[in-house]
Length: 190
Length: 314
Image 1 (spheres, each protein chain N blue to C red):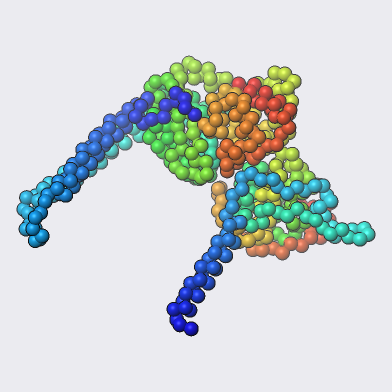
Image 2 (cartoon, each protein chain N blue to C red):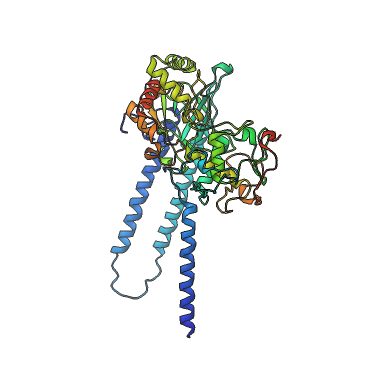
C-alpha cells in the first residue's frame, strides 16, 4: 500500500469522524421554539414504586425530549430563577424545600417524575404548577433540575449564569448517582 | 409597520441630535470629497499612458504630491478628532434637574422605571417612554441578561446596556412627537424586534399621563371581562406578568397594568390591536421565534374574554 493511499484513507476517516461528530452535535444545538411536549397522562405512566399487583405492566414512560438539548436546559435554568424555584430549593442546595443537587430523590429522578412533581405538586409543600407552567417549560425545568446533580451530559449542562455566580456551574457539578431517599415523604426535610 | 414615527439621525428633534447632525454632515461631505479625489487620482493613474516598457524614472514631483496628500489626510483626521471630542463633551455633560428613568434591556423588551422620591410614585412600565418636552431626561441603563444598546436616533446617540454595570445617557426632546428607538447591539434571535417608542408630550399632559399610569388596573367592566381576568390569573400569564390591583405580580415579563394604553405590543413588533394581541397570546413563537413567552392554547371563549379584559386596561 502506497503512502499516498494511506494518507487518503486517513483523510476519509477523519472526514467521516467529523461528520459523525457534527451529527451528534445537532441535537445539542437545536433550538425548537414550538413543539408539542410529551404528555404525562395521569399517574398510570409515572410510577413512583416498583411494586405492582399481579403481573407487572411494562412501564411506558414519556421520554424527555430535552435530555441532550443544551438550549432547553439553559431555558430551564432561566425558568428556575423566573418562577422562583430558588425561593425554596435555593440554587439546588435546598432550603425550605429539599436540595436538588444531591443523590437523594424522594419522588424519583427520571424526567417524567420531575415533570409530575412540578405539574402535580407533592405533599408537604411542593405546589402544583399544572395549568400555569406550560408542559414544554416543565420538561425544560426537569432537564435543568437533572443537570444540578450531573445527570445530563457535560456539554449540554449550562456553563454560565445571567446573574451572580453562587456555586460551581452545572457543567462542572459531579454526577450523583440517584438513589431513592430513605426518608419517608411524610417527614420530608427539613 | 410604517407609521409617522420618526427614526432618523438626520431629523434631529433634540438638542443632542442637533449637535450630532452638523458633525455627521461634515464627515459626510469630507468623505465624498475624499472619495471623489481618490477615484480621480486612480483613473488618472490608469489613463497615464506609458509607451515604453522601461521602468519609470524617479519623479520628484510625485514624491511631493504624495507627501502633501499624506499631510492632508492626517490633518483631516485630526480635524475629525477635535470635532468629535468637542461634540462628545458638549452632549455628555450631565444636565440640571433631569427626569430620571431606569431603563433595563431584556431579551427582547425594555423595562422602563420612573424614579421618584416618593415610593408610591415609582412607576414601572414597558417599551414606551413618555417624556415631557423641554426637560432633560437622564437614563440609567442596565441589562437583565446580555448586552443591549439604547438608541433613539432622532434624539441622541447610542449607549450600551451592559449586565452588571450601570451606564447613563441623557437627552432632551425639543419638539413633541413620537420617536422610535431600536436596540443597537446584537442581542440574540429577536434583536431586530426589540424596539421602543419615545413619546414626547407637553409637561402638563405628561404629568396627567403619569398620574393615570400610577393607578391600579381598571376593574373588569362586565362579566366577560371578569372572566378574562380570572383566565389571566389562573393560567400561564400570571407566572410572568404584573397587573396592579390583581393577584398577578410577577416581574419576569412586561407589566400589563395599562397595556391598552400602549401603541404597540411585543416591543414595537405589532400594533396594539385586538387581532394582533390574540395572535401574540396564542402563538408568540410564530411572530417572534425564541421570545420567552410560551404558546397559550386557550379555548376561544377564554381567549375572547381575556382579550376583552386586556382591552379594558387603559
